[in-house]
Amino acid sequence: MHSLYQNTRFLTGATSLKGMPEDTGREVAFAGRSNAGKSSALNRICHQKSLARTSKTPGRTQQINFFQVADGRYLVDLPGYGFARVPGGLQREWGAFIGRYLQHRRSLVGLIVLMDIRRPLTSLDEQLLDLCAQACIPVHILLTKADKLSRSASLAALRELKKQLQARGYSASAQCFSATRGTGLEEVQELLDRWLEAESA
Ligand code: GDP
Image (tube, rainbow, N blue to C red; front, side):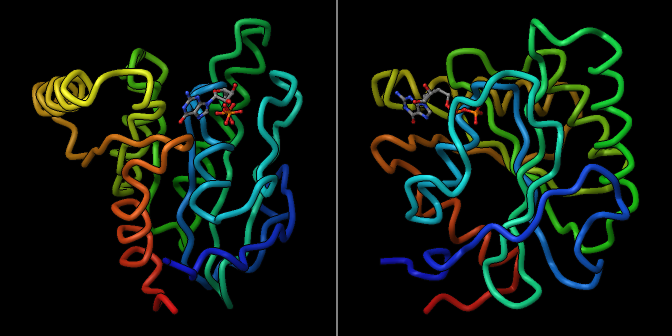
């Protein structure tokens, strides 16, 4: 078993760049529409039941949460976007805060973007990919809840996503993922190891 992420623990939540841990380590951030399965993915990757809380009240948590994997190595939970009940102003604030984080955080080595395999690449997802391209941040996409589709339908969805990414000029990589079944778990953990330059135990 891949045990590096097992001892991950919540470090701090920040609502401004100033409130973040010292910008000297390596970190990978997770982002996605609300309900895309981000908390479930983080919990599964870290073999923990409630590291990141699932199914929070939409729009309540507008902070960036830092989880420490090892010394100077972090996984970062960005607030979900695309809540129907969140007014436009808050959406703009989200974009501005996340934009500043992506632009200025030197420790940030990559972004994992989560998209429901049945509804990938919405216009908000594309806005996030644009922010990452502007900030030169590598992106890896998890097509979540892959267990909701047959294996062949999942692979077809992945192929279609890759085609769309290429057509729109995005260089992101992508894979299928299921927090429920553990599909794609090793693949994403290996990528995190590389990005964080972390040794698995
Ligand atoms: P978040 O808002 O992005 O953090 O999403 P959550 O992790 O809270 O998940 C949203 C909903 O999708 C919850 O009801 C989860 O139980 C469900 N969910 C998350 N991951 C999976 C998965 O891999 N398979 C299935 N079938 N449901 C999932």
